[in-house]
Image (cartoon, rainbow, N blue to C red; front, side, top):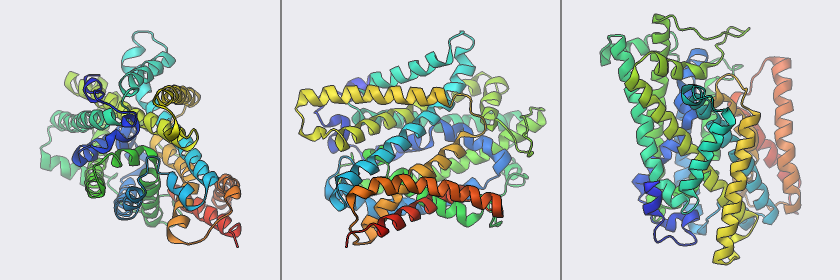
Length: 466
């Protein structure tokens, strides 16, 4: 609230959307780590080690390559066109219907992504605090969304650049303190902890079974494409980057961010192994499904942190999960508001008073949508991060296809048919994945985003202008 107060002084009409393009690049880079990690990474990545080993790191390696594409291809393009909503590029290249289609897919993707991220954090806060106070789950969610609205509604992205930095600090500190608490409890030195992790049965990084969803090339290629789609073609992450003073600062931001993010995610995977070692030593068990895979892996970290490691670890965990949940949802709601107002409501040409009124109404509307999605998915089980990336493959695939076709070909498409192609492609991808799984036991895994993008490109080429 204090940061919001100081950053909102001397704000212009554009501050909510552009941050007045004055953000220090290193601040943006560090803050983006918290938004990218979210409560899902904070809890799901350590938990998923039990059923997925270290295979997620193959995906992270692909992410690093994807960020290079964002840095040297997409950022120069966005700065050249002086975009506020990045989907303005699609109108410039193909037409107004294509812009609205791209924006709509982002709105759906980000609404579900933000809701699923917040769902996990809200469940933990419910378990830790609100159940004991006999406060219903839906009230917990409303409280979080209300607090986010209070500090973002005035200056939006200008405030978030600074609050994200604070939140990232608490998130990473919580992971480090938890590792320290576990190693102290197990009487392990730093070198002994590293040995324990690297020699554990879960420390398997590479998978060479081509039918598996965790096959190296599937994970690596999916990591590249999902990084490009969920970061480079995502208004949420790019809006922060576009608040940097110039293109060079924006590029330094993404390169620095990608390195910090990769190291932090590896740290969380290592934490996951330590959590399972601790659970084995103290006979803490997780329910197991019919196929022998752990269920409810997202409960492992909160359970141990809050019930076994003492008050300091418990408090640091709660600070971390609160920081992570707020960091992901505040920027998501701002980006959703920006995309909808610029791409559908043409807010650029409104008066100052109209801008403020429209912005507040849209921000409230998306807060309501996120709340509804959270309540619909409130009974899901398993690790949420896999669900998010699987959904992303279907919702971001058409966006990826549109941008790749626009940037690397001179093909002109029939603008009016673009919405139909982009809606049909995810359905075709889904039915194809079901068929291959049942007929040949071949799992697309996260690579479904590549299949989806390819089908979108093929459909657009078939309907291209002569």
